Length: 283
Image (cartoon, rainbow, N blue to C red; front, top):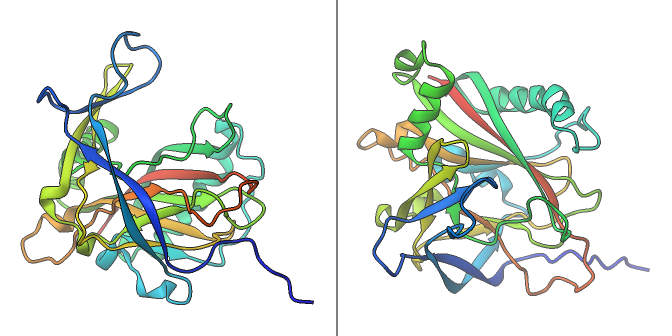
């Protein structure tokens, strides 16, 4: 008797949440952390929902690369020494070195990796962070340079003369293939500069970074890998300094978002994931 999988497969049309500018004309911002004034909105910009076709890359995974698309799927990754993904110190000790090794082995020319944080997302109501159902990019060119200077104050000028990037390493934590709230990415080759909107990212400790929201554009081409498993890693490039060079042909930044697949079973297991963010230096 054939086993029928519950994992949604193939291309799908889903509703994605894009950016709408603040109605009062003010500069857009996000608040991060719990120590901001209670009467200040967590963000001051709005939503813009559109149905888009999201293409399943299964069967053509190797066709997508960081230089061309700003995302790349790596398969067959050995089991992690970190099993629980609960304690930050354990994750940093056991999982961070695995991520560093993965990046050095899979990004040509990379010779220095600095992991600066990670985020765990779970779908249960009590989770500290849940899947983000909003199209965004985690960093901008300005915020990446600021991070280099923050973490390497003595080496920054030299490092910024080299190729530098921020790459997120995303993986599911579910024991079963991902069924609910999969992650979608839009190829950087289809992203128009005018559709990238810098957002002030204000932390409660006073640090101000910058993320990017995305305007809807029907020319954007969206993709996902159906049923991702724990031995797969999705590299999500947020910035590549090569993109600043005229004629390089490298976009270096990929919009991404979790999405609700309309084919998902009502009682499907909630998605759990970890994304590790790293500065990557090389030639």
